[in-house]
Length: 187
Image (cartoon, rainbow, N blue to C red; front, top):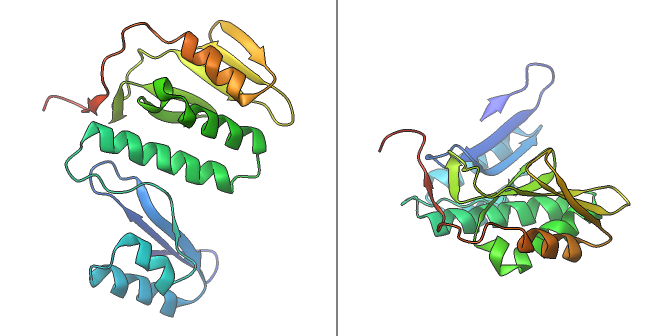
């Protein structure tokens, strides 16, 4: 919890302990609402109950994966991306995330974004791999571009998110390792 130094506003951000990803966040001018969040969290309520206690708090889609299970981290990241995409006023981005999630070859990988381009890894945060080179770029009101790497060779432009995902899936490396925990250093 923090206070704005510019105006009377309070910020709440609840993060999971391993990677520091926000599980809940929000801001309000009502300090009593902040106290309700703190009390609800302190009382051990599940995350889904906190927005019911204080409506300014939003769930980010991420959830805590206490054992660092790579499959759980992949699921958490997908849920966050889908939550975020549904809230952003960019239909092409939302369509791209949903189409990628529907593709089993991509759904098994750890998704992440950079500059609103969808990328994939065979290791989770904090140390993402560089072995999945396809990158999907949505364009506002237009088509989609698929590249090898963020600024690499263009594989093609497509009219729909589904076509972009299909092109990306066809260009995945043949033998990808299962997703592993991306440890920052030696374990």
